[in-house]
Amino acid sequence: MPTLRLDVVSPLPPVRSGIADYIADLLPSLMALDEAPDVRLVHLPGQPVDPALAARYPIVETEEFLSPSPGRPRLPLYQMGNNRYHEAVLALAMARPGVLALHDVVLHHLLLDITLGRDTFPPYRECLRADHGWIGAAAANAKKWHAYGAAPVFSLPAHRTLLARQRGVLVHSAWAEGMVREENPGVRVRAIPMGIPLPPPAAPGAGAALRARLGLPPDAPVVGSFGFQTPIKRTELAIAALAAPALERVHLLIVGQAAEVMDLEGAARRAGVAERVHVAGFLPYADFEAAIAATDLCLNLRYPTAGETSASLLRVLAVGRPAIVSDYAQFADLPAEIAVKVPLAATAEEESAALAAALGELLADRARLAAMGEAARAYVAARHAPAAAARAVVDACREWEGAAPLEDAPGAPAVPAPSTIAWHQMPGEIEVRGAEAPWPAGERRRLAIRLRNTGFARWLAGDRGPGGLALSLKLFFEGEDLLEGRRWLAFPRDVAPGEEVRFETEIRRPPGPARLRIEPHLFGGLSFSFLGGPWWEEDL
Image 1 (tube, rainbow, N blue to C red):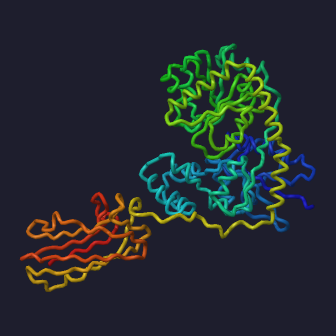
Image 2: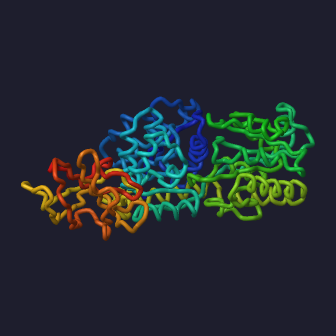
Image 3: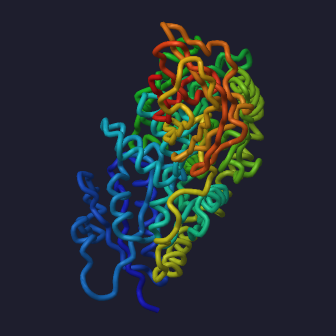
């Protein structure tokens, strides 16, 4: 069997990325396989590379990667995450199809960062339009006006075009595999283990030393939250839970860089628990392991989710620390023997109370904690062995090496067209017959009105409530609308793009100069002309 030739495209240590640590752990296991692949690393522009890693593996620049030498080609193996460290990975994966390990199902945050984060709006809208059709374009318009709600960010994963360009996609949970299949019919996708080297059990001495260094009492229960701190990790819920009556002695250790929007110290002050919340920030790997050893229990709450399998959580489990997780999405893969699941709640107060109850119950039962810790370590050893993960990667790469990317895969899902309830552009045509000159004063005429929908959105019937349409007629004479109070003509049915609707009505011409205006209006009084819609006006 020919040797598999892989070009690994990923952030690398010392970049502060969990994916950089993951690939550093995976590489030795790849090289230890019986039929080890021929591996090169691709140096991403502007990112440093650990000299020890550079000494062990061949490294090529992106220019050489994009201009492969003649002969049997090398297969790109991309490691794709959801932050700016992966901007170059995204560009290279679009240029050269390969096998892509999707560490985050949702890539919308990366898209935001590299477009709106640089005050550039059109590429953001076009990328969302390509991946999600008119729904993506509509969501982008909201962002243009600084409506930075979380709902569209997590519901529109912004990855369809990227995945359709690949030979195959790897994920790390059954839940993520199901999500990718549902969102991207036809894309080859497979769930494989996330390789986590099994470290020695948590060292009590190292944990005690770190407690002393950070000012943690040697005998107090300590709960840890590890990894990059963002609002979706719900760390502020854990801070609030410390105020529960049964948790007066419990301390919270927070390890990991915090997003700019996070104010963990302020949340601790507001909850009255500032002296029991310890924000350590980013720690070197040795201190990270000591921090895990310093804790009794790990928190890994998440809502909403980008679909990631948390390497930091698996590392905590690997040293023998159990976890409390959200009862949601990818966490469903974790057995109850190693992780207690806290249900999502309607309010932060309810969820914080449920978390406090779970913490109190677990921390009061040291035997149960110890048993869960042993089970957690055994789980990682059995399910996330680096050798098994490396074998799964190589097997998938061999299977997909000659596969063609899904160039003809649709960029956006087939969804119904929008309607007047939500869309912002309503072009159309209007024709009025019967108002032609001469029109003698006082003469009553029957007007025939035809409206044609030439836009993208469906015009809703007048009885549909919000978004429904009615035809307004105004006849201005000596500063007064003579038709004021006359009932508008409701659209009798929905009008799809390309369809038309007709009306007939009678009008008496005033005894002097007048102006007649005919125009559709949305339910609630908004004129169609504000949306680029059709209207007709003529002096009589």
